[in-house]
Length: 125
Image (cartoon, rainbow, N blue to C red; front, side, top):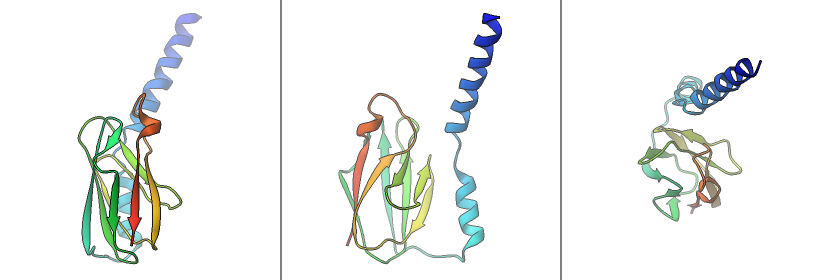
């Protein structure tokens, strides 16, 4: 009985781990098919390593399409811009347009002990 339960738990854990490591390409494909091609005025590279982003603040122009690119240097990371529907996982990108303001960016893939401190800011001016 215990062996069956342990096997079941192991299977569930592996399934969750594999699904969390997905590439996220589905969203990118949906966005390109659902909306006409939009070109970005600039690109912003956000580099993620274990429990930190490479900058404390990223700045982009308001009301202007900008390509946000996530590059994982170490570990598996993603990010979301809090208060928006912008979510990028893995080494992917998305073209975004935001109103002026300061937004919080946080890692959205559980990446270990420092995950909750993996935050930065996005200033839109």
